[in-house]
Image (cartoon, rainbow, N blue to C red; front, side, top):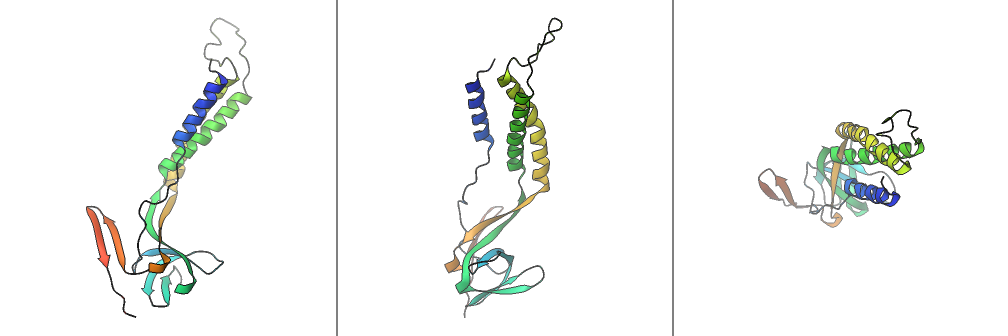
Length: 191
């Protein structure tokens, strides 16, 4: 028999261990080069502009989108972010799936608990003895399908990573990670 507090503490520890933590990028890009994918917000309202930086001018940035090209005035820039590429979020989705599946299973196990009536010797051998045990068993049973569904969702979903770039220096210097080290790129613009 598992005491209520022990089951609750165990659930909290599992949730803390499996919950994905969002953290800030350790390194921020120092600038954006022509040809890189960017996300820009200009002005007070509106949706971010996502596209490829085509040209940098002294007063504006030219962004190529899927269907058109747009000029963004530098003085209106609120934020600029550089794309680090896309990836699948399998681990994060699996963690979320386990937490959701275990939670739903624990709730279902606790709500459907009925004391076992022993009709013959050993017929209640694996039956939970109380609501807490039913909740723990339901949580374990729910975690497995949650894990599998989370893995499928994580494989099906692509997420793009963005790193902030200083609005004041949307310009010349760039450090790019490569398979074997880091490449530094320096470019000059004459306006």
